[in-house]
Length: 258
Image 1 (cartoon, rainbow, N blue to C red):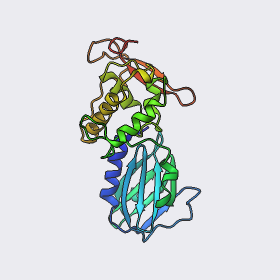
Image 2 (cartoon, rainbow, N blue to C red):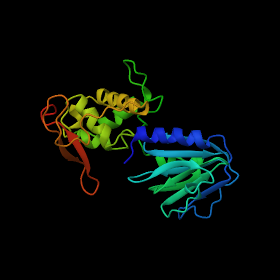
Image 3 (cartoon, rainbow, N blue to C red):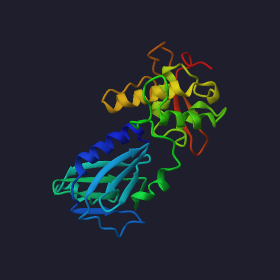
Image 4 (cartoon, rainbow, N blue to C red):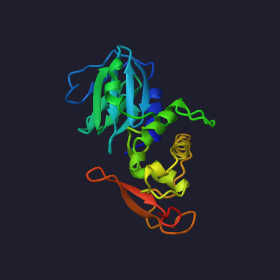
């Protein structure tokens, strides 16, 4: 599933394509919005929140999309064969005179009043990549402070499960879970109340910011049985959370020993 860094890059691409432009075609191929025609509306901007995208329109409504596992927004030339968007996997078509944004296989799609966005994302923790999340100074910023308070309420829950809980902090998935814990040699199944959340969350934020800037650092995620870049031990794969919501965790049995 795409993580907060990927969603931030997707939002930037949608802004480049749509922000400030009037739609000549606007279709939402979703049961609750199938009859909606957005042609004539102007897109104000798209804002990411964790793993969610909020595309705001000039009429006080918001298109909310979630990619889930297989979804993606693609930008193509208007009038091209791809821009016709005939595929049955297409869930949204937002067209300007020269460019078309197509939502493929979106996991969720809503059209709501902008004032009611909180009903969709209000249960989430603070967005790890939000500009106001942290000051970078000694005192945690407001978003980080809120995330720490939510973390503390998790008690002895395994740290890998806490990092994946979007109600604690929004945006982290299996990639940055693995890389953040590896950076600090933390056993993924350590009780969360034995881990410093400020240190781990600041590291996750830095790694994700690097990814957005085009310099992702992947040391263990997806590298099962390949040598750990620090000690050479074969990287292992474990499991976070419980079925049916289990997720893979990659870790070094030596660097991150119990």
